[in-house]
Length: 267
Image 1: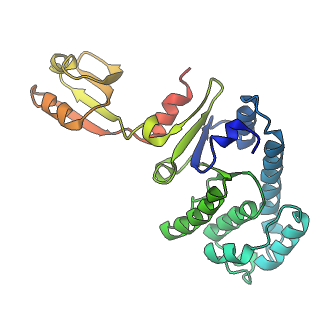
Image 2 (image 1 turned 120 degrees about the vertical axis):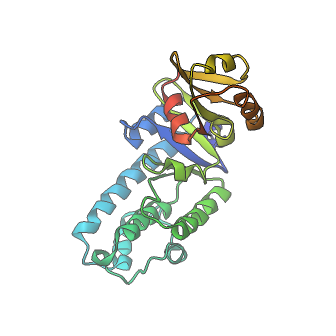
Image 3 (image 1 turned 90 degrees about the vertical axis):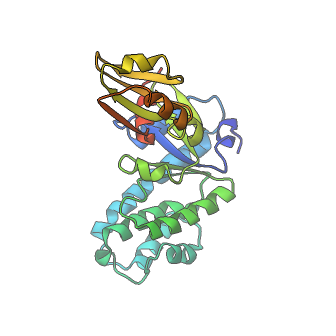
């Protein structure tokens, strides 16, 4: 790839997170415009592919009397310049029966067809939107196996999700945040919750503790309760909390979704 920006994304499974009120095309446009690198050819090809896949996916309802194999033949015909022919292997991985009629496919199977339509195109960049929404763990494993084959070839794979961020955080290695204020790319381990716990203390005695607890980021505070992010060894925090009686104490890991929502609007 000619772009230095895209080079930094190669070989990684990346969670792409943007403003939930924007379309994926708008988020990609913001990312494209943020760079002076020359990746316009890859960007245009990707946008065109996403548009075509959506159009063909919508045709499933009108052409539901066709078998999947016949439907794919039509799709290949219109995408012949970039369609990769080894789809039998991919169909087997996705547990899709090519002889089955589209009208007999369930929601999870149709979701995997959508995945297939994009996966089989020869692109430098792939964006799979909400790919695992109705998939079992076994099906997700098969889809990830295919995705990693793209990554091994130095292609770039972005995953997006609004409804399964907690599931995504178990599989992605990096996060790319695209907002109106900034573009931030970092590893999951650096960006968030593996380093932070969300701590809620209630009771007027918490004020005696506040100066004793190091490495905190204050979130909310009133006369009798405090909520903060703690970055440090849990045992050290536990020892400090034991030194003062409190009305209520709750500690949990900060989720990836909480981190992303907070970072989205940081300037």
